[in-house]
Length: 577
Ligand code: HAS
Image (cartoon, rainbow, N blue to C red; front, side, top):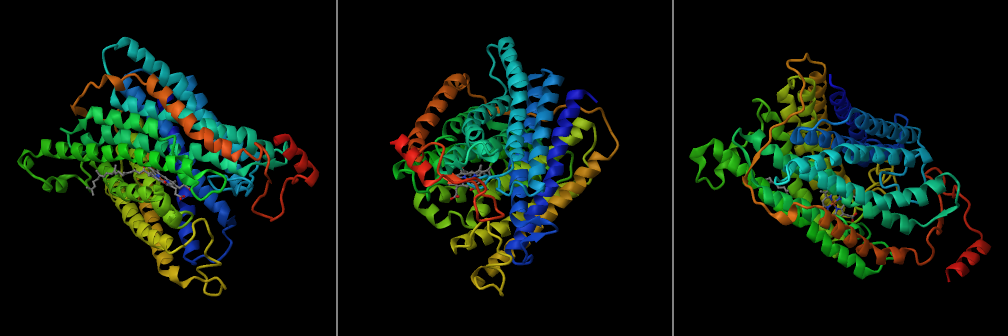
């Protein structure tokens, strides 16, 4: 097999296989919370250790490595320019070593800090360095393969628009490059020094602000590759005559994401003291702005589906809603099994979008923040559309790249619908429970869901049990997917492997020259990001930039680093004043 193709196959295999652990710990979560597991640990893995593994593997590792794999495939196929073996190998090895380092820290219980790694909780330094290597590795193909190929293509085709698939992936990785700046500052100047014992204290407010300056844009880093594939591939999977309704609307959506993904992070910090309310309100307003490109996408995708179905069934030309019934929701015909992943994901994302807008509303957020509502929201966004499209396309590309026919298509097509039904139940149950005050990130097994505990909360029992049923069903859906995935991997080759996929032409192909040059939009975005963060960063550093709290871990209420003495504190205060 061609070396680069082999690396891309590894970039698909590694995250999908790791997801087995991630999903396993997800199912354990709902069992703990329903009181079916009443302990602090299960099979040697503690509650918060399992929750860290669940979040880090599913939200960080699975997404990042697959996004690189999809980017490689899309650039290679659409620009028809080969990728460089050395660059790809370096990128993959960095991501692999980073993942292994972080995995070691998590599996040995030295990094029970959850995927948000909020200080003053402190992990072993290998966790932070591992995460940093994963990020660096994910940038290597962008800087040394995609960008050079993009500029070469532009030189050869000065009058043409770059293909929309390349445009989407490019915007996404530009966003990625910008958003990692704050989290790199947090890791390099705050977390690593404390973890290595070079300093004694950390400023948690500053760390959280830097984290969320990265932590909200990152959700769009996960989403945009799914949107790119929705635009480019879904219409063709639905029907041979499928087309993207509007190329211009898709490009506009990507640019709006570039602008609005950044000045929004404070919507995760509405309840935090130390940041002036008016800045939070400004971020709230921008958050409504970032919903606009998703509304635009809902319209574009629905219009593309309508066009694609009607092109195949001309007798439905005047049908207002009847054409919805002709979408191949559950089909094993050719590659149509993959449509199940897109459609189940889209239905989930509709709910994820609505709950996101509730979260963003400053006053409503006070009701749902830190409750079970929040996991209900993100299991229909990153755990819904993103995961389903990524899983479906991993299986599709595994078949294409290795020259194998996808096996057990009936299982593969059913899997996303079980996932959908499971998370629909989970979503309703956890949303209701959240409004009733059920907390997130809490081991309810020995506490709220345990009738023998003094803090037993019978009001949440039904919702917690329904959540367990939903989470388990979704887990079974994942098992069906894995059976088809493994059967495909170990089946015999039926053709030469190739890097290709169906590409939908645009029905409306608007020129929109203002969207063709990305540089001005990138400059504007960077300035807006900076301006929207200067005041809150000033707020959280008023009492000092680097000091506030000693470090802790989850094992002991005593600090693991030395707190300042009264004398030192006095000296520091004097220097700030
Ligand atoms: Fe979010 C918390 C606000 C989108 C992920 N979010 C989270 C967390 C995660 C996450 C992981 O404002 C938890 C973080 C933590 O651990 O603390 N989110 C939003 C808003 C949006 C949004 C306004 N989130 C996402 C996406 C995610 C994601 C996308 C991952 C990929 N979120 C928040 C807020 C919080 C938050 C607060 C903090 C909560 C707190 O207090 O802690 C918007 O971008 C959503 C816009 C989406 C739409 C939907 C468009 C619909 C489409 C489907 C069309 C369907 C079709 C099919 C065509 C407007 C595109 C046909 C269907 C028919 C029925 C006809």
